[in-house]
Length: 131
Length: 138
Ligand code: HEM
Image (cartoon, rainbow over all chains, first blue to last red):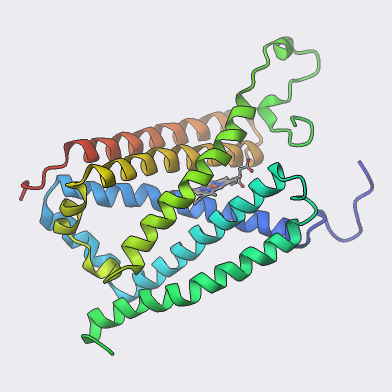
């Protein structure tokens, strides 16, 4: 082991933060999946029970959380593909940083219209059809 | 691999006799995370796009919507594959995280037990719902 650099435990930089974000999004999505399988299981109870619980997904605040969920899954998926490229592509380690900025750009490119459409559906349900 | 990325359970204590019984489990687990990940890109992102963005998004989802989708074997198989792959991928990911942070043997053991039991329950529940779904239950 080399001597630790002064003032910090990790080498840090983008590589570490991309890993931290991958871990946090992975855990969050996994726990949401537990909840989601259980709320879907209500279709075996009755249509009313299912529709009642699904109604909470349609409220504005939960709709905002859904944008966060989509953003978390999308980051995890894109960064997962980056990890796979680093592991299996000969040039992967050399371009890992460029790939990170690539997926961040792609994430924004998908999330801006994605969030717009999701919030649009919510607004239309609240205020009736908008143009 | 085990040197660069040592997870505690694979670190044998000095002089321990378990050194002989090595397995490739961690290698297969590593490979599984990558293969399932690639398949999940299509299944999960497709699912989120259909459910949250297409048409009316989440606003159009209700019992009748689910019944309509599960009338088709295509979406049944899609959802079943997604359920199993995502649960196994997530459970295996959490196993890694527990190995990383839980330092005491006892803590690690019981946290993983809790993880496996709850994941087993969710996989079983989801599978049962998919196979026994009844559109005329109401
Ligand atoms: C959508 C496509 C997905 C891709 C491409 C993907 C890819 C990956 C990859 C490559 C890893 C790293 C494994 C390693 O370092 O050995 C990983 C870890 C993980 N994934 Fe996914 N994954 C996806 C979806 C999901 C979903 C839906 C969940 C939740 C159910 C999830 C939960 C996790 C967790 C908890 C980890 C462990 C994180 C860690 O060790 O820091 N992933 N994923």
